[in-house]
Length: 260
Image (tube, rainbow, N blue to C red; front, top):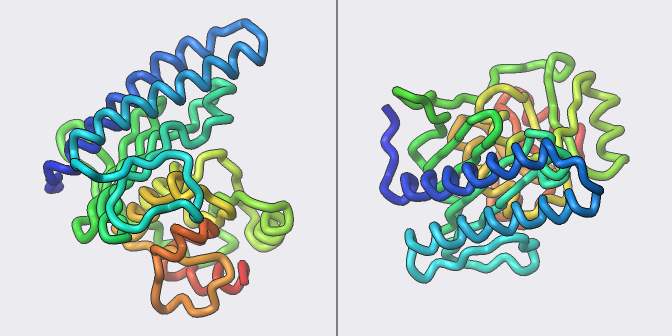
């Protein structure tokens, strides 16, 4: 049984509450027969509702911590805060595609120290604390997450997102590439060994912070696209930059060369 701190327990509760609201809205969205504009308005209201729930619940956990949604690296504050993505994979959600996530990360002293990612529709919830490992929630016990043991690029399943040039380069070298629409879930699946790597550009920090910690605590590696020296990681820089590679030890050198 994994030890879950009081702070992480409350974060998980906040994510579950937002996820429950999104499940109800998703079920209604699936049956909407109205115009695209009406559906888009419904999806936007769902996003705002999830954001409001998360904000209210997280404010009870750490008094004085900033709660930040939809920021970019230029406005990401230093210090202590929560980074939240109420719906990472918003386009999927708006089209009644169930591949989306609720993501929350706790930042203290510029380091990611706790993380929760939920896929409400598949009922998957992943969590991690710095130094304590990464886990998938289970009914009786939690499953310890470990990145895959893949060693050859030709056998990998990689999630990629970004400009056409990067995507083309990845596809030329890796035969199995997907674009899922949710980088948060992609990173959680790397941590769980369901994906071998994520190569993704221009990410909002809110969408990748929790996943970065999950990958690290599952024994994986995260570094910037184009980074020439990957012997030591700078997760804060990767978070602010938003252009990341996440994978296992065996593939990190090969993928660094590929994305250089």
